Amino acid sequence: MRLYTLLAAAKINLYLEIVGSRPDGFHELIMVMQSVSLCDRITVRSIGVDAIRVRCDHPLVPADETNLAYKAAALVSQRCPGMMAKLGGVEITIEKQIPVGAGLAGGSSNAAAVLVGLDLLWNLGLTQSELQELGAELGSDVPFCVSGGSVIATGRGEQLDPLPGIDSLHLVLAKYESEFVSTPWAYQTYRAQYGDTYLSDTQSWQERQSAVRSGAMVQAVAQRDTQALASHLCNDFEKVVLPAHPKTAALRETMAGLGGLGTLMSGSGPSVFTLVETAAEAETLADRLRSALPAPDLGVWTARFSSSGVQLES
Ligand code: ATP
Image (cartoon, rainbow, N blue to C red; front, side):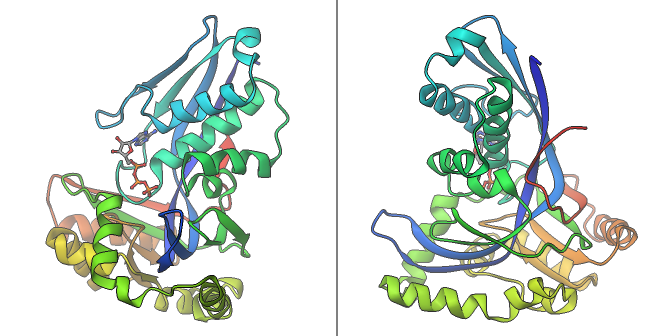
């Protein structure tokens, strides 16, 4: 086949703790990550010329070699020399549904989809862990985006331990189009304000990981206890992002006041989500949010937890 269409799932963080500063310059993290059904649609198609082309319908997403999807194709092409000459180059079409720069791993999910798509298009036979190793070279969230589901992620986010999935939960996601948070800024600000709380050695990091693994959030996910899960939502980035982004802080407060099981900012923000038990509750809460904050630039989406990262479109 000369064309594959894949669905690339967004992620939310149910738990995000910044533990320390690593010698490689990244932060040491402990996260509980969850795929959700909000997806971009990625098509990879063979073209007759020896080139990588990107088409994207979103004005904020570059269609050049800085696009993470392009970088993923370039990496596979570099690691599998001769494939492009033999089978032709690739045109990548990205249909965006995941809000851009939202803390939902939109770019990372697109890169993950291109890794999976090129593996199929060029018949490379790569295993999931080989795809994830390639993904780790592109970004810390890419390995998770390949496999998706519910995981504990440690290291810089690339070391993944699957958790039993909670597919039954639904959510409302919201983001102001005009609000953006730079992830490097969020880390730098966190380091400046909370660097003195960092654990400094790998033994302390491992002890902290063990404590989180046996702690309330991970146990709640493992036992599929949705009430307990929602009451232990936690994201360290909220401490620096919300004070600097009052509009997003007000959005979070409004969403938390509308009911639901629990509300949190995802990743480095500025998207905010509220968990609910059913699709009908998600629609009702989304309508109430649109009425409470009738701003034209407020994007509101409903979704559900998903056990998939990248999936072939059926
Ligand atoms: P993360 O949660 O992994 O930190 P994010 O959801 O905050 O990511 P993205 O949507 O991935 O952020 O976009 C971050 C930046 O990356 C944007 O400024 C965008 O221009 C650029 N970018 C490059 N490639 C892509 C892509 N395929 N999709 C979206 N953004 C991309």
